[in-house]
Length: 234
Image 1 (cartoon, rainbow, N blue to C red):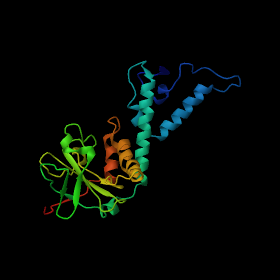
Image 2 (cartoon, rainbow, N blue to C red):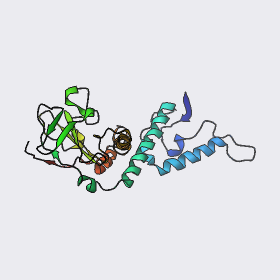
Image 3 (cartoon, rainbow, N blue to C red):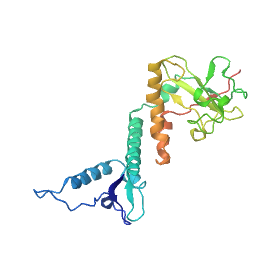
Image 4 (cartoon, helix red, strand yellow):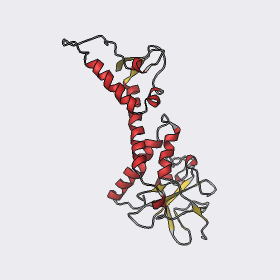
């Protein structure tokens, strides 16, 4: 179903939200509910990155906006708002980084299910399992396989991702792993829910939508950096 909203070539803010029945008034002389709705929408848009949102709308003259377009518009707005709110509330990651083990700078090129770095064990991340290539690593495109480590069952964790040669990836844009506020090694349902809400959902809001500005994803990696690697003696 099409929404009764039309756009003109001038693309002014008001023209985006003028309804076809804009001249309708109520018996007491006030503008109708449609006009009130227009005002409310404009006020909301002014508060939530109006320019970003408007760039996503159709530009052709007299082109109507479908319900799908509106869902995309306000869905993206919600993701953008949730991402920036999360970034503001999330503490500096330095304290968490001090509680986790540095990633090995290399992993065995055979990509075993687990490996020992000389002191601690690293286990395969089921979300980026090298043995399942190419049908894996959707959250770490560019990586061939990832491993996880945690010191405590309820604490933060390290996710280390590697290229085909077994070299650690440092760039999040190339598939690097990230710090986890709640490690994903502990399979307790309540703990996994914390991991999902604090580590996965923010990524979905900040990075999993190509229509959002590219720098928005950087907000996530500011709070969930890959950390550093270290050359352990295997």
